[in-house]
Length: 88
Image (cartoon, rainbow, N blue to C red; front, side, top):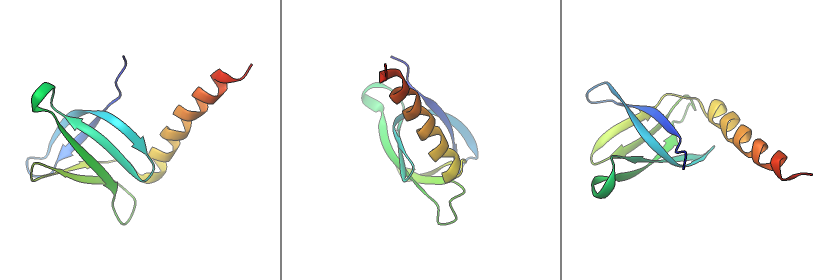
């Protein structure tokens, strides 16, 4: 199974960490931080200006620094590939 990973920034420490994408839509991205029994699921939603996605996990703010348009294009590309493979 090929899990998509993205880099998010922890604003408190300014560190970049890799997280696994659980689901990705234009209006929200669900990510999983950690592995196994210590994993935490977090929902990232677009900021009001649409330049990033932000969420909170265990009291820490995390930010995915991609615009809403970039995420929409990524989602469309993923769905476009799937639809094309079904047509014969």
